[in-house]
Amino acid sequence: MNPLAQQLNDTIAKQNPHVYDMLSSLGKQIYFPKVGILSQSAEAKQKAKKFNATIGTALENGQPMHLKVIQDTLSAYNPKDLYEYAPPAGKPELRAAWRSKMLEENPSLSSEGLGNPIVTNALTHGLSVIADLFADAGDAVIFPDKNWENYELTFGIRRGAEIVNYPLYNSDRKFNAAGLRDAMLAQKSKGKAIVVLNFPNNPTGYTPGPEEGKQIVAAIKEAAEAGINVVAVTDDAYFGLFFENSLQESLAGQLANLHPRVLSVKVDGATKEEFVWGFRVGFITYAGQIEGILASLEQKTMGIIRATISSGAHPSQTFVLHALNAPEFKAQKQEKFEIMKGRANKVKAILDSGKFDSAWEYYPFNSGYFMCLKLKTVEAESLRVHLLDHYGIGTIALGETDLRVAFSCIEEQNLEEMFNLIFQGVQDIQKVSAK
Image (cartoon, rainbow, N blue to C red; front, top):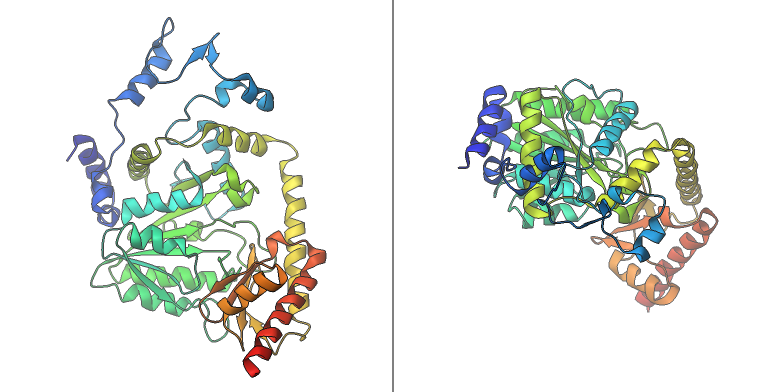
């Protein structure tokens, strides 16, 4: 094993052996090279005042070489904030700004024991990095039966982990904390579980209430007290889009410092929070650990990034940083929030009218981009195809009964027409089946 990796492992094992045991075999072997092109280039950037011939970029007239046809469209930005490589952990100013934003929006997150966010190529990449660091073949990765399908690829196919599902809702149509608890305790023989908490949930748009949040935290603590090392990953892709009296903060704060056997990992990003999907800017933040562990986990995370994408796109990071620092940022974001909230409320009003009760019920939702219909009389895939072919409406079929509708991309004035046409599609299929 590389001495740098061993040094990081020794630091983690000495300060919290449970966190060390959470690491995958790759996670234990990975490190960020201190002696190499990047480190030598960084040293040269500080000291090589006459000629710096270290890094694979090109300079002209003292600034990064660039094409006028590109810079003309980006003239508001300095070339040094666009064309140079961003550091593997991300633009330092952006990391600091995102950390401040997290602390402001999540009072339960303590600045003490909170790592510096590490920039990823959006949420999928962040989750993939966590999978590499913590998931080995056969490890249990636990998330609800209603989930984002990419979890299967990221943790199951790529890393060979065992996917463990539990029903998202209990009989009271609330978050099924008991199901989560049972799924974790079933891993006692393994001594380890990776738990993914995604709120607002994709595909249902559900976020638990404060009491449900306490139950989730209590279930994870119970698993830890039973001797299970829990990597608690909060997938906060849609953070902030809370339209009702649900949790208003990430559970990452309550999970930090919960128990020595619990590692709180927050994965979030500007992607959906700031409506910049194509920018691909996300973050990984470790919470509730002492400085040595935070620094070691950061180095290992940087090692995975260096070994895969080397570093994230610099222009996107610059654009997001500019937005976060802009005085108009909060007001403009609130404006978009109100539009999204209006669409969600309109959907509920339409569905609560009773007009469609013969065709479907809907799963509880209160946040995010989506909601899900539970169809009563037709199969979801048949309806999805029929809506596309006959009405030009796109939806997502999930299993036999569930149809996901993204109200985020439908103007409020068009929502009622859309649901009327979905209902008409159900009736069309029923008429054909009756013949």
